[in-house]
Length: 292
Image (cartoon, rainbow, N blue to C red; front, side, top):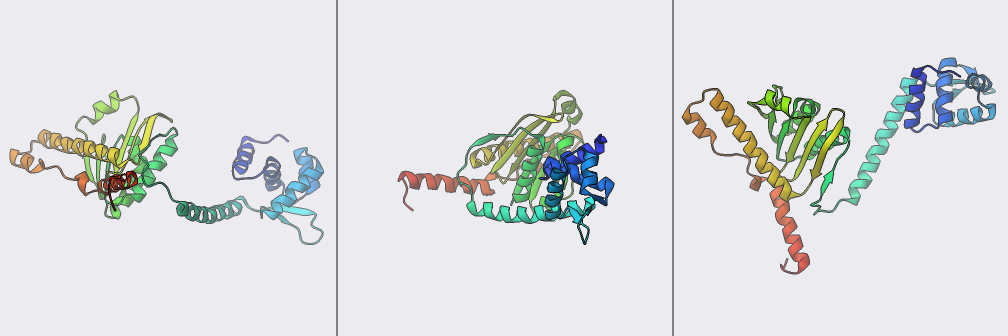
């Protein structure tokens, strides 16, 4: 059978959702032909009748196909929206069960490794997850593209009471955050060959990424509280310097500039510092150089 591109795309999509090639082809053909006999679908597809009926039985068990009451010789495809809603509910239920099981396994407390990320969606999802679990403070420096992608997640964290500082390179509205726009935003946007995203949360985790169109030029993530504090400090100073530069550019008085000098968001108050102290204590106990 010669299928239009939309049908071929649909078949590939169904395969990604767990259908076999035969099941996907039979379901798509049945959508176009319903109601129809198995013989009719086999003829349309140019497939063996036995294989077509096998796929129809499997699709019936999955709830994707309805069988006519009586002799069961006629089949009808369940509407696509109804089928996909069922898949979504089933996936979400299984996701919740699996997430709970994985949470019970836990992760090592002292992972100081630095890890490479290679896929744009992987990078953005890691940023979203960091913002979902941040407890106290987050600092973000980002170009317009990636910043707009995670803006809803930033606002959600701010709504939970997280102290969030954002340095942007172009005007953007993000509710609930301390936002500063670079005084040389246009220059950086023109000179940097890509789009930057840097995120530090709780002086504990950090993510540094450079996007190159639809790919990642380089990206790293770490939950090392030591490196997290280093990045937190650097970003806090960068944001503070940008605020001072903008105030000077806008003609702020010396009194106002002096009032701005103290640097807020000390990493010593963040969860990352406490985690680093706890990790050092655990290592000392393990080495026998410290008593409980």
